[in-house]
Image (cartoon, rainbow, N blue to C red; front, side):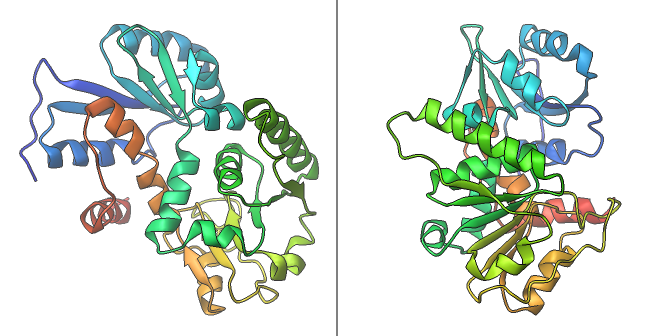
Length: 301
């Protein structure tokens, strides 16, 4: 790894959140900066919701290249962007801001990209998987929006299930309307919902199960949560975007059932690649050294 250096010409970016102390993004981006020998820095920025616009404009004026955006600012980031990519428009949220030389702000949503890239890095042929059956997403929050959008782009029939059924129904309507507006000549997206107390019984029809909720998260409301996967078909792929712990009860149950399982840490790492390229001008990869570095940092927390 190259020696870390920073000068008055440093390229600057950061992550805006409230709180932001939990974010692994500074560790990851500064690791990549040092590895590539880039004169730059990536910093955590704790910004309250009512100060978000002021903070973004201030960073832009101070010469920052851009920023990642995390909870609770993703919809505010969507609103402040002068231009957003199609996937961000459909998802209705932005997690990556790029400050352009002409003074405009470009917004993108890279969570869905990171999710699909993680599956592919785990050896899962996503395009082929889409032909085997629907994707069942648990949850109806911001992560579900982004992941559902990317899976629709891959040709999946996406089924949402949420403990509050109205949120799943509402998200389906929003995604459907946004998709039709963004791609008026394309086929209508395949979107539907299923009751929270009934999805386990339907696993035999599914090709992909995605947990986008906090269930199973260490320190969360239900850290031991593990659903019944006995009805699953043998080709079901089970994924969890929770990465603390790195093997959630859901993933453990999937492996015990003999199913393919994919964890959440890779999504976190892959979603960072487009921003790093835009801000610092270098391609990165999520290789064994990167994963080992972040896992060591997680184990120390």
